[in-house]
Image (spheres, helix red, strand yellow):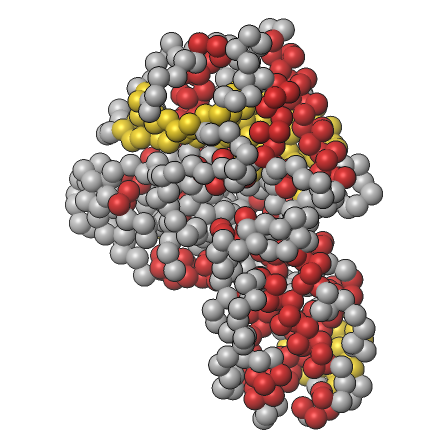
Length: 610
């Protein structure tokens, strides 16, 4: 698997490691910018020379990539700037997918600016000879990069930062122009943080699917992300899925259980023994988080390209499609307390008692299983997971170990970091980096940033605790956030670094105390002129502002005061509102975009009256 200096945020089930919340991406070094829709105007590439350190003597500079679209700008009218604060993917991913900026630009006479995050995509510095070269991969430095660009634009090019342009561009029409930042996921966090940190530059911010309340001191439930996964599933689909997991676990205890399931499920490699149950259960459960994130009303490769099989389109409403093979009556009943994970699943002669992570039965055979509709249920589970794992439809058998999901990537990345060389001063007393990470496409820069800032999002640490579709529980009964993170205020050993690289902190704070103080945590004090939008179908909404207790039927727009609102999009997946409007968009996202447009109009009007 190719790793890269980028990745969308995603869940980690069980355990904690610095920088573990990441996604990988097929390619880092993409130089061309091709529009996702060939009718889009060109986004003209620019290069900006930025200091590695904005807050003291800088050991060097790096080239930051950005591009501008001026097709919607009329120089005879008052201008505005829509500014995408890049996150952990290459620049072109946001150029090609942030349709909201394009659709609203004509209404606000906007110049579109897309800026790439430092250390990500093609904006990676040459680190050879740089002391503590990884130490400049931080949120604060990235925000300062964006602020420098915005200051340059808002001054009409007079407030000079070292700029090298691919062509001669005149920014004089944008003197004092209001600037609206946009971002999704981690980029949504950055968008809100940019307004909070630089209110004299940023007029307002659209912060879509920003998991800002996932920081530990916001006290997110450790299974919050898992509980949101089922929001796009019907009750029967959810109940059948969990029942099937329990039944599989008990079948695997039978002498012929492994052989029976191997044949029934069409596995490419037969299960050898009962030890194969854990990988099988993992295979059946892992894609659902990704399916929920990508549960869009139109075909989309956005999430599969980021963490899955590649540039292949999921069908419209993929969670609904996955549930088609499960949303029926298989004559399976559930009794007991599912929320306490103490229940019984039964169908004819087959009965399984569940007590947390343990199953027991009074004894049944594979022949008994065959006399029920359980085989159809279990085959339906494979059909459901193949909406993701066999998105191309080309696989003729089921390969348990090869389905690429965000969860599997997390495990591979964590393993890589566990065996990385700890080079904190061990190779060079001056901490001079001797490796050029800009030339190494296998180096992942996202963990470095999360380590530097203690960016720990803890809303998806566990699953199967009785509030979601999963089984068995990933942690013992009674596990708390403190069980994962340890004592508040205690410091733990920092992240390891590859040989020849330096700059990550020697200690880490699992509770993200400094970041919480610096950017407010769950406090909204100081967050003016921000729209925090989240999709009810998106697992990351579990860490969104004002999202945790929301349910369908509640007000979709929550006034936060000081020009800020929170929006819950009932039929929205991961930052659906930022994407290109389509004819199949649900009413909830159409209304959300209208609120965002109205808020932007209000902010700009007030800005111009100053």
